[in-house]
Amino acid sequence: MSEQTKKFGLIIIGSGPGGYVAAIRAAQLGIKTALIEKYSTLGGTCLNVGCIPSKALLDSSEHFHNAKHHFTDHGINCSSPKVDMEQMIRRKDEVVFQTCDGVKFLMKKNKVEVFHGLGSFLDDHTVKVKQDEGEQILVGEKIIIATGSKPNMPESFKYDKKRVITSTEALTLKEVPRKMLVVGGGVIGLEMGSVYARLGTEVTVVEYMDTILPGMDKDGVREMMKVLKKLGIKFYLNHSVEKIHHNKESVRVTFKKRDGGEPENMTVDYCLVSIGRKPYTDGLNIENAGLETDDRGRIPVNEHLQTSKPHIFAIGDVVRGAMLAHKAEEEGIFVAEIIAGQKPHIDYNLIPNVVYTWPEFASVGKTEDQLKEEGVNFKIGKFPFKALGRARASGDTDGIVKIIAHRETDEVLGVHIVGPRAADLIAQAVAVMEFRGSAEDISRMSHAHPTFAEAVKEAALDATDNRPLHM
Image (cartoon, rainbow, N blue to C red; front, side, top):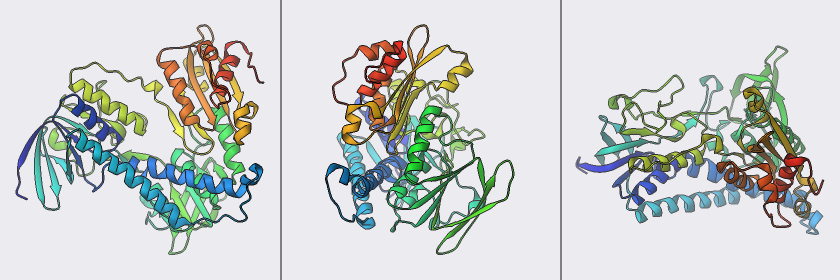
């Protein structure tokens, strides 16, 4: 293909949830849009090696765990269920394929022109796309950088993608490991650790901080610890990893308490490193556009997500804020509408955070510790799922709903749920908080019976005037 130039109203670099959703919204608003993706499939980390495939494995592992441990409670006798790892991975791959193919269809439907290849800036309006068959030059009136993030991996950890792995490789293991050590007690580490714990792996988590899920509600964290320990996961909190050595068959990890003590050694089949992610701008040549990154590799933006060049925007994991797919989506829509002359808004306090273990852990708004730090006078309502009829019927009795409301105004300030379908239940809290609703508002809404959502109503009743109906 000979080099040629194409002009667009908007060029988006990166086709993850932020990029492809921004492309759809921009196209809906009548903007001629180009989407650049360096890999052969659309969807970015989330759809290919993140959110979607991990949830597919989480569901598969939960089915197996229930068949092995809980089906007999329901009068279903399965003598000895076995894991067919190849089929489990095949199913996960099919889910990924269908989802990515759906994004491809949406690009065609919305007349977004897709370019596969490595995009890099030539100047602040011009992007070169390096493809196998040559180069394509694109000129954009506006540009969105949506290149996402990649796992943090210290060189000293000797990452080989075979025995020392990230979540990417953990999604394609051909066997159920006998032992796995997870470095990091954050969301990704606990999700992937719980997958393999359910399948029968001895899982150990080594976490640098004195708690798992730092920054999340402390009551929810306590509930999660109970559940994960019940699953057989062992924890070494307030520990740092000193050395990792691997060979073809195993990994030897050395770790010790941060405040001293003798180092401990553990030999496992795989060491899953999950210590966060960092913004990804490799090969983008942002300096050619007059841009630079901060000391954490992020691209600085203003309240409208504009970079130092007002016609260039950046969204998602490559800018400040939580690294969440739905946060990137909201920012993608926000920027597309800004470009179209609209006046959208994002309330970052109301972007929920979810841990997709089982039960799930979902939070939105402020935690108790944050409100204490801010000097806000608040009250708390709680309700355990074990007191809920629907939870007893399904056997999902672990967890609680916690609602934090302003003591004087009763406005809901934070909702934290550990329990079945918490990821779905949290949407009710987001809706109420978006309109600055009160705990009493939730308590007076009719909730269908029997449902998991009734636990939210009961917690609201407890927060309103300590009068839950079923506790």
